[in-house]
Amino acid sequence: MSSSSVMARILIKGGKVVNDDCTQEADVYIENGVVQQVGRELMIPGGAKVIDASRKLVMPGGIDTSVHLQETFMNASTADDYYSGTKAALAGGTTMVIGHVLPEKNESLLEAYESCRSMADPKACCDYALHVGVTWWGPKVQAEMEKLVREHGVNSFQLFMAYKDMYMLRDGELFQALQHCKDIGAVARVHAENGELVAEGAKEALDLGINGPEGIEISRPEELESEATHRAITIANRVHCPIYLVNVSSMSAGDVVATAKMQGKVVHGETTVAHAVLNGLQYYHQDWAHAAAYVTVPPLRLDPNTPNFLMSLLGNDTLNVVSSDHRPFTINQKAMGKDDFTKIPHGVPGIQDRMSVLWERGVVGGKLDENQFVAVTSSNAAKIYNLYPRKGRIVPGADADIVVWDPEGSKTISVENQVQGGDTNLYEGLRCHGVPIVTISRGRLVYENGVFTCAEGSGKFYPLRTFPDFLYKKMVQREKCTALKPVEREPYTGEVVEGVVSGKRDFGCSDLDTPTRPCTRHGGVRDLHESSFSLSGAQIDDSLPKRSSARILAPPGGRSSGIW
Image (cartoon, rainbow, N blue to C red):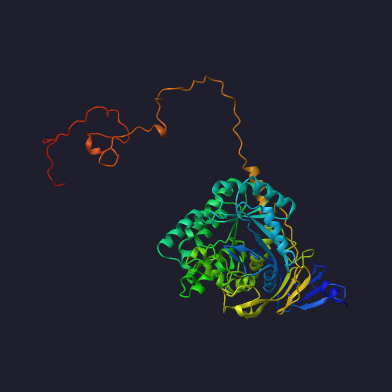
C-alpha cells in the first residue's frame, strides 16, 4: 500500500460532527481531497487511514479572514511569510486564510496583486485567497477592481476611513467605491475610524508629551469608531451596497451595528480575537516593550467590559466573524516608535491561537456553543465570501478541510513553543481547554499531535466568486422594491409667470442677501431694551427715530401694594 493511497483516503471514525446548525455522531470518509460520505456504518474501500475521533469533535477547518503575511507596513516587514504563517494556521486548526494586498498610494492594484501572488504561491501550506485594498481612488482603480474580479478570482476589497494621507478615502470617494463594489458584486470591507480626528488626536497627545503606547488608545477613542461606523453604514445604505465592517472593537460601535441590523440594513461585522478577549489596560503597563506589543488599530479598549460585550455580540449574531488580524512584529521593530507612538507599527500576532483562545473564552466561558463556534470561525466566513458549502461545512462534496478537536485536551500558550513568528504572544500563560489534534487540508493530513507533514507551496490560491447570495440576494430584491420613480402626472398646461430678471424680489431674500443689522454692545443681536417693542429680525419701524422711555408714576389701576 503506497503512501499516496493512504493520504488519498482517510476515515475519521467515532467522532461528533459539528456544523454551524447541528451536531451528529457520524463517521467521515474522505477521498481525493473531498468529503465522500458522512454517517454511520459506512461502506468504504480498503486502504484508508483511520483516525480515531472517539470523544472528539470533527469540525470544519477554520477560515481566518484577515491575515497580513510577508507584508511591509509602517516601514517594517511582518515576522511571518506565507510559509511560516500558514503552517502556524494549520497548527491552530485553520485550513484557509485570506491575506491582504495593500498597494501604495497611486500604485497599480493589479501590479500589487501579482507581486503578492508571486510571493505566496511557492510558500503557502494551505488554501488562501486575497483581499485587495482600495488605498486611493480614480478611474484606473475602478477599472482594475473590475479586472481583478472578472479575471483574477478576487471578490473583496478593503476600504479605509482611517490612515489619513496613507490609505484613507474621503466620503465622496467611499460613496463611489461602495457603489462600484455593488456593481461588480464584491464584498466591501470597511475599516471604520474617523481618520481626520484620529490625526488631530495624535497631534494633541504628542503636544501634551504623551509619546508612549498609551497614546494609541488616547488618540483613537471609541467615539471615533462608532461615528465612522454609523457614517459607513449610512453611505452603504444610500448606494444599496452590503457592508462588512472589520475590526469592530468597542461597545458603542457594536451598538451601531446592532441598531443597523434591527433596522433591516445588510450589515455584517468582524472582530478580532484580541479585541474579544483583551482590554486596553495593557497600554498603561510600566514596561514599554510589554505595552507596545499590544499596539493595534483600532486599539484595545480601556473598558474591561468590552471583551465580554463583543463576545455576547458574537453569540447573538450581531457580529458574524472572528479573525486574528495576524500582523506580527518583533519588539525591536516596534521600538521604531519608542519616542513617538505614531511610529509604532500597528499589528499583533494570533493566527495560531485564534481558535483555541476563542474556544476557551467563548465556549468554555459560556458565551458560545459548539455550533456558534463553528459559525464564527468558519461557516459565516464561507457564506460571506461565497465559499459555502464547499468550505465551512462537513457534507458530501465539500472540500476535506477538517479539524479534529479535543474539547477535553488542554495546552498553555507560550512564545517558547509557538510556530507563528514574532517574539511575543498576547496570551502568554493562558491555559486553553480545547485544542486541535489533527488538521486535514484538502484531504491531506498536514498536522497530527504536534507533527507537521505539510510541504512548502502545497497550498493553492482559491479564486472567489462574486455576488455571494448571503450578502446580495436580499439586497438585490430590496433595491427592486425600493427603486425611486418619478410621480406620473398630467403635464401642467396653465399660465407660467416670467421669472424676475433684475431688481429686488419682494418675497424674501436669499442667504447671501441677508440684511445687515446695526452693531450693538450685545454683539450684533438687537437689544430689546433699546426700544419699546421688538420682535426678532428686521422691523418695519427700524427707519423711525426711537422713542425715549418714560417712567409711569401712576399706572392704571393704581400702584402695586408691594407684596410682590
